[in-house]
Length: 241
Length: 241
Image (cartoon, rainbow over all chains, first blue to last red):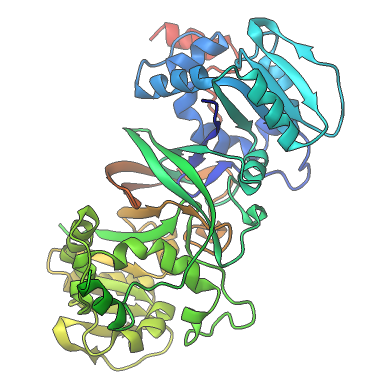
């Protein structure tokens, strides 16, 4: 059954790139030489080294590894993608004539544009009616496979905040970056009494990255429950269990 | 051999408490009823439920579980502690006559004070000569066991930034808080080209928390290495491997 999923490579402190260039925050053309790039390359190194990713991009080499299996599985699970406009703009040229998606991609944008057909089964459809509509269209197009939120981080947060994300997988690179673009930030819109609860469903260990997969349960109130740490009451209740 | 370790319970988005009260950022007395508390109780729930933690605090009940084993092991590994002043201030009263440390604790502070002796083997020594001196004293006191950085988060960051932390364990609660006090932030002082590299050394899974342990390798330059993703050159180099 189709579910809405997202997966992202992040540092242990939660960054998916280095910091944006304060001089050119919207300059996508040069981002690979800007301050975002070193952190991005570091957290995504495990992907680029994986044979399954290199094959999909048409690059030689790569490692046959548990990481490569995860890349393969991730591509295979996606029946359609939802993508943010900024990510599309950054990718359009480097992805070239045969982008790696091989599936319909729905780009959430304010600027309408004709459907873009690429080789290998990738189509980009530009959706100006908002995120929920893009997910709706992707669900139909996914043919029973998953709808993957391709990114960027802002779109992942929006899907989470809207309560539409069902599975989240973080690929945690063993590095601290200290600063950069965070996958999660206060734009999730949670108050001090709210959290989004998850359940860990799969952990895969590799020497160079840890893959943590969660089912997203949803927003719920945090309770001031100290589990009896401040008195006898709960201890007593427990002894009656 | 003595190593300097830290372990901390955090949300999946890296918070160890909810947000500080902007009205009373330094008011420790009331923090358990302020906005920091719901997030703190959520991320540390697995500890408070663990039998080994409850025993150490003198509370009844608790679960005999893999989490309890980790609490037990964490207490057992510590020969001495280093602690921040804010954490000491918050704990002094609630820890009572028999604090849970049962070992020498070195509090990094600007205010000198007599050594405080408590029951169960806990002593608090107030070190005004800085963090490195506190760690040095704790190393001597640890008798071959580990020096644990007890917290808070700011002290953990300082020890990391100073290159003095050798092992980091994060207990990741499956929840997103969106906002709060982050264990890692830009005060680590890393530039866009720098990272602190780690190696995952142990992962323990439980339904309600994921324990990730790392060896801290240290600060190193991030490289703009796209592993051949942008051209033939590296692909060629690889084919010569």
